[in-house]
Length: 356
Ligand code: ATP
Ligand code: MG
Ligand code: FE
Image (cartoon, rainbow, N blue to C red):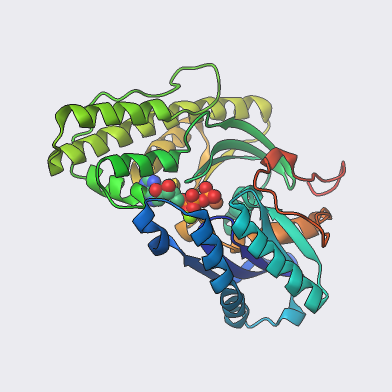
């Protein structure tokens, strides 16, 4: 099976061809990602209108490049998979319309993919993971823990009640005068800081509710920064280090609960796995915290390569292959409309007995 994937839900224009032949491991034949970060940096965040226009300008060339790079012609592709939500509706329209046009012209099926399903299934592309497993998705727009039970069979166990974690990093960076995107710059600054200087709150720690919250932490950072302004470089470093420590600690508490629940719900799995995805998964302090937690709890810790953790089209093509293989590519209609909101647990599921 060969699928051409298209991703335009946020600020990356991406196309990829992924192949699966018989029982051998899947192969990413091409994976082109054009980030718009430079175009949004001046605004300190993604501007939807700029994003949509940039997708329009770039997508045709990116698709051509992905096909050329893969040495697969459109004729040899079995289907076109495109992100149909959730995300910024302008970008979704561009990607889905382009995919529909290509599919119609080449007489191939179109598969509408939920972006979060792409993230959720990536570990099967990169690591051949078997169901079920636990997913922690931490990006600029999402902070979720999901039990991945099968293709089309996802159970969200936790989400954020306010800011996404990447958003908290970005806002903290902005407050401290660090450039966008904030995450990598906060991490860099934190490297020279004293994590014990500020006692920031660990939001939700110990709470019986499974969810995340980061807006209180953000407020605490603002208060601390205001109290000691003007900030020296060392102050900024200390705040970043203390913020990062609070985040890692709070995240660890939430994930530990989920690991325990997973043990209870899937008692027969000898070596269960925790998969991380999303841009924030690049953070080394967070990674180290989760890795330690997993080794304590007897879980495998799976972190796909960063290029496949952040937004890309290989994960969309792969989700298309998974859906074709499971016989649930039923979003396959020319009139599928982009959905800016589309919870992962509401995607179409396999009929009983198939696709598991
Ligand atoms: P979506 O949420 O729709 O998946 P996105 O573009 O917001 O899309 P990603 O591209 O996966 O998400 O991740 C970007 C986010 O990850 C930004 O908020 C960025 O600050 C954060 N990030 C990137 N690197 C790091 C890091 N080293 N530490 C912490 N956060 C990071
Ligand atoms: Mg992005
Ligand atoms: Fe994403």
